[in-house]
Length: 418
Image (cartoon, rainbow, N blue to C red; front, top):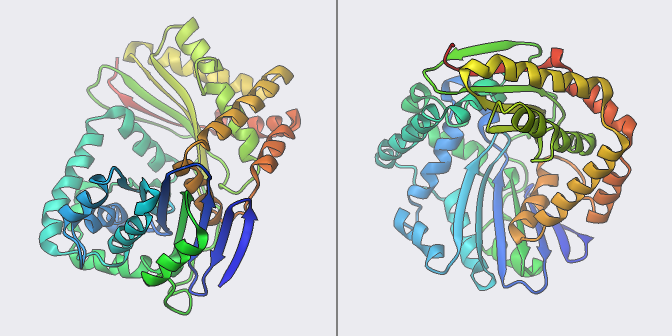
């Protein structure tokens, strides 16, 4: 095993079987957050099995070789802890936040979920209905549904454009044997990253993981996919008719992968463009024109691409006015960038957001796992803050001209026709 100290109280151990283990000791805390990330998710699915990664995430909670579904639900909750999971495009994550004394128990339960689920057909018959209800919930929530439609429009030829939940048709066809096959091909130590933060001792964490069998095996069981840029659409417009009292509109474009250092000027620009009440879009679209209650800019970086865009919800009768006003703001940003004062304020805003986010162990845990999952290197917080401070107007101009040109935008509108 290779052990490295990356920062004060922060360690990384790389196991010969491909597993990476990270921990950060935070003095003064009586809790710990621990998570296990599987490097397989919706971005690795075949079209006919869309939603299988998310369905598997549900199914592991239906029982393991040593615990029933009820025992899994109760084990940490009765101690005040929490157990959670989510499926993304690049990875599936299982996490727990517990008292420090319960960290071994949390690791045991997470290991049970990931390594020894029963995946029985009778459980699938029930849980499939739960996921179908989740899909229906999105279909009944247009401000969620429009983002699924946008992803499909942005990445029409790649699984990044799939609905993470899947469709009623694809989820309806998945069998227990399909889940077991996906599980066997993804849920093994060499395809996982384990991170913990809080009142955590790295050596004790390694001992617990060794006892639970995480260090077994002699290498990667399957090749890890390389980081390659996923192509995204540009300049397309789609309208989906829907009986709705609002038009839900998303503008956006493909951007950069998570390890690209342009993420810092892009984050600054996104905040200033539509990141809060003081942002350009909020002030123009809501405060000056009164066209929307909800209008905001967003960005997300993945392992092989990213996205930046804007959402607005407005009445069908004002949809065209809102779209024109937002496109005007896009054009102004692409042509003129930011002022020096805006850049200075944007740097401070981003630094404050980053530092405040690290005030809890769960955020620290996610930060640890993130740089490994994205094949990046670890950066000290002071280095990150210095990198943000070093962002120039030229850096910002490069981002705004490339990613905020209205001609580049993919636009999806969901709603009724006026």
